[in-house]
Image (cartoon, rainbow, N blue to C red; front, side, top):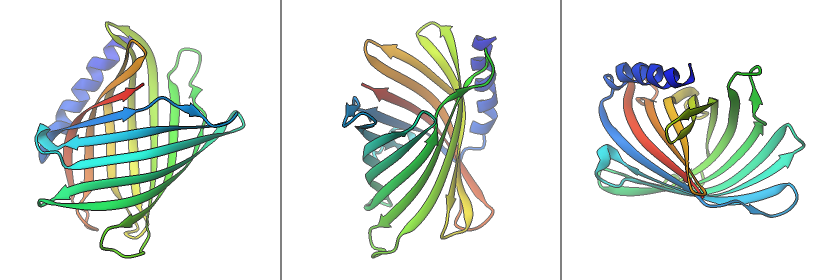
Length: 218
């Protein structure tokens, strides 16, 4: 049953890919080991690089993530972020402060998946926009099953919604039909397929692209 979920999710992904305007892109994310700063607080560094259509490097992101446990049910995240992206040959920088309030993971039934959720509020300062603060709210949910399929130990599906306060609309959606987790030595490796839909300005037109990604956690 669990192994068949991978095949089913892959089949669900193929029709989505047909609607992509470009792609596939490749995303790489690297997480350093967590460092304990106290009984309830830890920190780690996250770096991300993106390559549209596996070619030109066009995005870099680095974040220092601070996480504090609020009892056994919630955690608070505070993440200063620097990101830069290239468009039409020019690089543009953004400074961010991410604030998160996330519930602990929970299981759906005795044999059901593990559910994790992330609630993020981003405050963004964009190059060339002065002191204007752009607010964006993101919510993601993920269901994870433990599996035994060759090198893979987990299978997940997920979705993330982006809402931009200045536009008053949902501007992006990321659907993850396939996420596979494995372990190489002490390193956790996750592979995923992603279909990202972006709203064109404030219109009702959407553009899609698909992504192949890898995340490494040391």
